[in-house]
Image 1 (tube, rainbow, N blue to C red):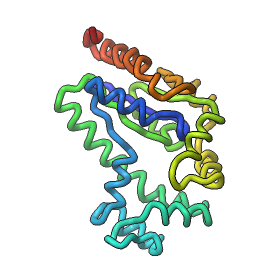
Image 2: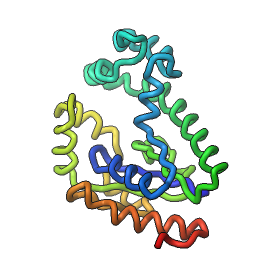
Image 3: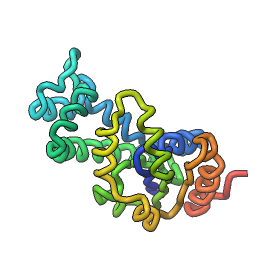
Image 4: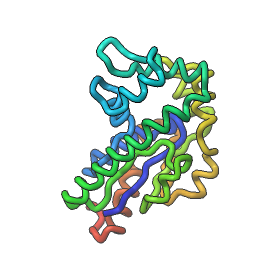
Length: 204
């Protein structure tokens, strides 16, 4: 089974591409959903995170992502402390997902990894799919999201490798500069190529 990373700079359109892969029957690991599970009451990340960020607790005993985000905006240097806790836990969940997909006989699995190159996770992948869009398009999309501010956008964008460098290292590119509804055809082409690469005839 091919391990296929799906990545892209913030607000490039990666989530839409992931949904399109899922509609074609590909198993898709959702990194954001994994983080939500880790932050929920009883999640593995709750205890170590609240030890470092006690003010980020929510009423149910989980981690309030909005509170945590505001704390990191006030002190960006603590982001590395958070990542040291969360990234290994997400990686463990991703490895379990891959094992299940392999047992089910999937020709490939899509692994949503936002900071793929920045964390070195690209080294463990068989193929890389990159979703791209110009910065002004991504910025407009990001600022339209609830809770997003110009300061938060700049902080998150500063953590990421420049898109041009990612393009040079990707196997497949999805151009999401236009309406996000338009990337389904591009995803279908990549889906067929991945299935062919795993020894399966393209979708008819």
